[in-house]
Amino acid sequence: MAMKTICTCFLILLSFVLVACAEDDPFEPEESFAEGELSILAIGDSFIAWNREEGASIGDVIARELDTEVENLAVSGAYLTNQLSDAEEMDIRLQYIPEDWDWVVMDGGGNDLNDECGCDVCGTTLDEIISDSGTAGALPAFVEQIIDAGSQVVFISYYDVPEDAPDTFPQCRDIMQTYDERLALLAAQFPSFYVVDAEDVIQPSNLEFYDDDFLHPSLLGSEVIGELVADLIRSHE
Image 1 (tube, rainbow, N blue to C red):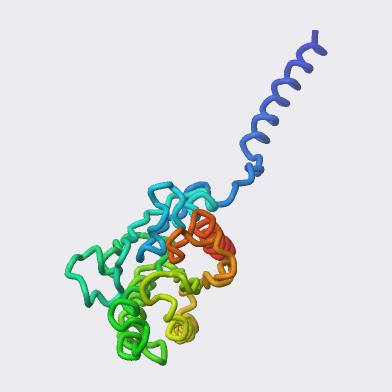
Image 2 (tube, helix red, strand yellow; image 1 turned 30 degrees about the vertical axis):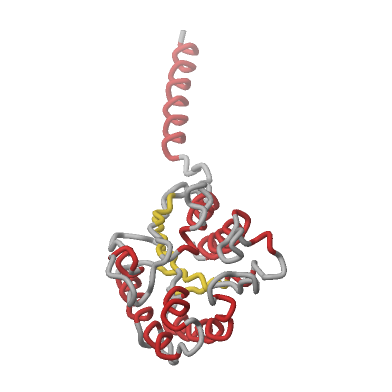
């Protein structure tokens, strides 16, 4: 009888120990990256807006790659200096919603340089976007505003287009190279500002990356650019 009582007490004590161990168990399942917690806003022109109807824009690809949502407010034809349109959505700066974004992905300036000066004598227009020191202009002021609000910024610079592209965009190579140099100076000033060069994944020698207009990204083009941006964001999270 005494032995039975001892065994019963031991089993009760053991059950308490097991419960306590279960409550104190420090093991937690390993979380996969993102799980939807990143808050990302995409703004800009047709470069980012393209293929949105197919659910395959650059923003859509970023969302898929990082398993999160991306609010894509980019508008085709939008400007950074808003010199040629009174519509608010055509000013990339006014697409920005001041909320608690972890990341803001953007582009811009191509329409300014093409439509205002035909990518030819564009010194004044480029200076309005970003000065030769990378410290002044519409873009640096806008980037500083976003960073001060607590977000990190990814700027996607443009790729070269084939000679068969419409308008004067094929003439933009030289001015765009100068633009890229100034973007690098801006990135050196703000640790939270990153530049992703679309030319790293898209070259005019491979037309599969271009839409039928030889200007905008094809589905494949948006995919490789979106993956490039996602890789950068992933590396800084």
